[in-house]
Structure formats: C-alpha cells, structure tokens
Image 1 (cartoon, rainbow, N blue to C red):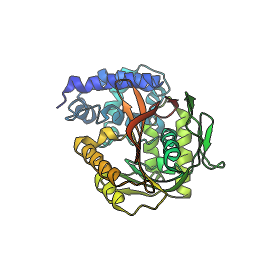
Image 2 (cartoon, one colour; image 1 turned 45 degrees about the vertical axis):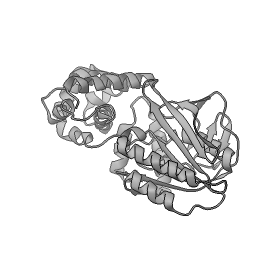
Image 3 (cartoon, one colour; image 1 turned 90 degrees about the horizontal axis):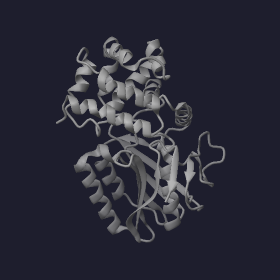
Length: 343
C-alpha cells in the first residue's frame, strides 16, 4: 500500500519520464505537483491517500490529463498559460486544485486511455516481420484497444524508414523518425481487425474526444492534429471494438475457426502493465496453448509494444509459431511512436 511520500514521489518519477520523452512542459507540471498537492480539496486528498501503486495506476497522468483538459477549455487563463510553459507552476497549481476541485476529481476514477496513433507504426513494423515469416494475410486481435485508434491500422499509411505500406490516399500518414535497419518490404494483407477494452471509449463522442485530447501532452500539438484526423476516420467508418475482459474475449477469439493461409495475431501496446499478474498469466497460458495448435497453414503470432521503465523506452517484441517461438526484440521506440530504432 502506498503512502503520501510514495504518491508524491510518483509525480517526480513521471516528470523524469516526461523529460526523457521530450515533454518539458508536462515534466514541469508533474514536478510542481509533487509539492503543490495539498489536503485542501478532495482531489488533493484522494491523490495523496491513493491506496494502490501510483505508477502502474498511472496516478500522475490521471491528474495531469484533467488539468490539461481544463487548461484547453480556457476557463482558467493562468492554467492555460502554464500549459504553454508560462507562469509559476506551484502557486498556480495550488490554487487550481482547490478552485476547480469538482471538475478535476472525476479524472482520478480511471487510467489514461490515449492509444496514440503513432504507436501503430511500431506495431506495423512487427506485422511486416510476421508477414515475412508466414505470408501476407493476417487477422488482428488487439487487447486494451482503448478508443480504437490502433484498430485503424489497416487504413493508415506508413513510411517506416523507407518501407511503405497502407493506402496511398489515407487521411493519416504514420512517419516516425527511423533509425537502424528498416522493416522488411513485403506484401501485407490485413483480413480483419478486432479489439476489446475493459472500458472502451467512443472517440466519436465530442466529450470523449475532449477527454482524449486532455491526455495528450501539451508539448506535442502534432499529436492533437493526428488524433482529430483519426477520429474523423472513425466517424466515416467505425472500428470493431467491444467492451469486455481481455482474458474472456481472447479465449473466445482463439477458439474460433481460423482460415487457412491467415496468421492470427495478438497485438497490444502499453497495456500489459495494467492487466495485473493474474490476467497476464492467463493470457500467456492461452497463447502457449494456441501455439501448440498452430500449423504452417494456420500460424499464430504475438506482436507487442510494451515499456521497459528502467531504460525509459518501449520495446517491440515479436513471437510467432511454428518456428519462431523465441521472443525477439525487433526495435526500441519512443513512448508515443515518434521515433523507432530497429535492432
């Protein structure tokens, strides 16, 4: 169980992570919150008395998301200026946490759900490796789909170190800074894309869109533009996203008949840490069982982008069966997919 010093320290840890991810404004806010939090309002008290582990619970990002959304609304000019890099943060935050207590408190109820579209570039690099191993046709099963922005992966255009894939007329092009060897230039056909989330968000709802924009760090306006374009794509054609438990949903999907010549792929990004030990173990066991049933006509693959918090980077890990069951790290990446480094 956490205590007040641990919960304050979580904001300093998040500040360091934000600084490493080229987000100095957000880092400055997180660092200031570590000292500005007080018991003068319900938001401050709940944050300081947080009973769980504040880092896996993403406690700092819950509160920063609420503050950023409030800043974007323009209702508090000083706060808006703070998220533009101006003003004395501790004084502003102490006041805002009390004056806007009621508006901020609900942001602590659930973890951030960002599902940044650029993360699709990391996953796509993994899918190209799967296509190289097993052939072009894949069906995608994503857990922790959040607002479903990665479920548009078959509709984005990608330029990954000169390897291009996806519709040429796509409204969104994913072009991260690429270092190292590019992914293989092979044919890829995405037969289907389905996703699940314990609390999915309908990004086409204006209130949800505002919430998602709040979770995007103020340092990165280009992410706001990409989010808006991706949401417009969902409005034009919805994604296949359902509410449910990842374990139950994946068990049902893995039990479905698999078409010959199609690789079934489990994919996810920045979700593993939120599942807890029991769900992680259950999913790993299911994949092991499905791998034992895989054939050359019906392969199985696991593509994930998940963080190494010690090294403060994301890692692209790919496994596939029959013959590639060993974990292989293909690349490291920025947390939001801004850069990818092939290994």
